[in-house]
Image (cartoon, rainbow, N blue to C red; front, side, top):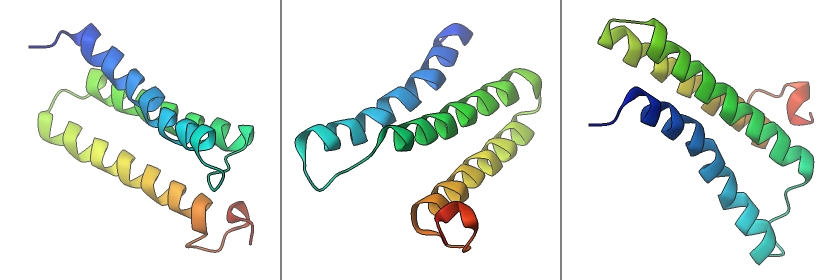
Length: 96
């Protein structure tokens, strides 16, 4: 069983692990081309998501509400990420 501190460390370590994937892609491949601003935006999105999930974990007591709110947070992350990546909504943030 993990302690609360271990769970918190895991939640904040996950964005770092995810950001290592594009970093390795940049180093090992010429087709993969992320700039520093790409890493900054991705890091901000991932760490804000981790912070929100950690906040929900500590403040919401009912397990079903916690799960539902975390799913909404993750879906919001996925929509924002998709918009920034390919512009599914055609907003100015996607470069349209």
